[in-house]
Length: 193
Image (tube, rainbow, N blue to C red; front, side):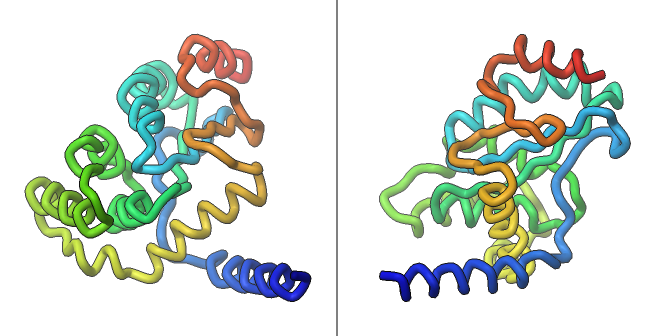
């Protein structure tokens, strides 16, 4: 048993050093120099994450991000293979913009269905091909730099913030409980401004 734990520790450290230096830009919005920095750890197959993107995020964007008071960074924390693949697609353009990420959450019910990962990938590919002209779905799915970036997000979330569930919000390096309560989120941000 000790050998197995040691082996996993070595593998984890190996991947951590490899993943630390990826060329992929983080997905973020807002003023880079904002006093309030929010990190959202999320999984693209998570219904609660989709709810955050469709119900809480628009208010947050209007009140704080667009006004330059808050910077928000979206980090991948895939809970399954389908979310891992979708995260790779969300990062594929490598422009640092979160438009594709929001699109995937808004259309989550269209692609997160099927009996197998093959079915889900097919739905995801069809959605991307129909709406995101010029993206080579297969090359995005197999891009090792993107894969490393997504895995690094997950590993660093566990190590630095002990992330266990999605969505998890980190506001100025502290966990925020109940990311679906916009009233509480707004009050917390206002205290920090």
